[in-house]
Amino acid sequence: MLEVTDLHVSYGSVNAVRGVSMSAQAGRITLVLGSNGAGKTTSLRAIHGLLKAKSGSVKLKGKEILGQPSHRQVRHGLVMVPEGRRIFPSLTVEENLRMGAYTATRAATQKTMAEVYEKFPILLERKGMPGGLLSGGEQQMLAFGRAMMSQPEVVLLDEPSMGLAPAMVDRVMNRVREIADTGIAVLMVEQNADAALAIADDVVLVQRGEVVWTGTAEQAQADTALVHTFLGEAALGA
Ligand SMILES: Nc1ncnc2c1ncn2[C@@H]1O[C@H](COP(=O)(O)OP(=O)(O)OP(=O)(O)O)[C@@H](O)[C@H]1O
Ligand SMILES: [Mg+2]
Image 1 (cartoon, helix red, strand yellow):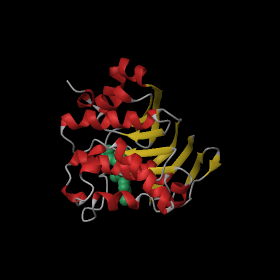
Image 2 (cartoon, rainbow, N blue to C red):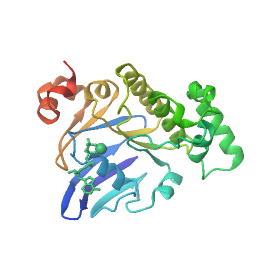
Image 3 (spheres, rainbow, N blue to C red):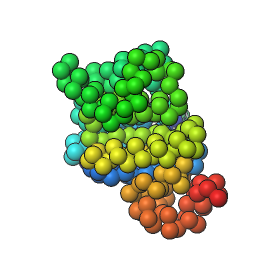
């Protein structure tokens, strides 16, 4: 569904991403783990056309899309939920959702919005409220809902659990699992390895801009020494 091959991205002389390859398959969650500064966000932003890559290939359903602007990618089924959620705080929940559907017709937008409200009842409850007044967890649901408005086939998620209370983290992860279970391919960056491994299928470990390990979530969970080595003792809880 999404195939990233030998991606290189630099900030001036800083080679932040050095030959990263990863993929996402329909109905599966690929989890990208790595410590601070490993190049996770840089990779996602370059994949989505928000940063210029130096070289590499990004194929969506077999078609090369590297360098394509993000709005065009959204039209072809690839959407990103950025780090920090980036909802519009002064717009209502419903207006925020509508922002995610700018490519669709009005009738299609209404239909998709009804589906999003069905999946995220809290958003229906809060639909007239400014996005900025929602709790962190609710804002993350809104960011997911907004992404779903474009009826994506592949979703890029950058640290969906960031800044959330521990009790909320598992709920957000369960939502990610549900999104994948509808057949969407998910490529997710997370620092919260413990919670993310519980719902992930495939794992990519990134260190200093390079992929150092790939395997299944089961393999990563079984090999705690590996995860500790690359993410530190805090990565897998106590
Ligand atoms: N705008 C920028 N200009 C210059 N260097 C940058 C910029 N953004 C990131 N970097 C550097 O690129 C490297 C990768 O950063 P990136 O944000 O992709 O890491 P990350 O894996 O997402 O980390 P985190 O877990 O902190 O979100 C780091 O060394 C960082 O300092
Ligand atoms: Mg990041």
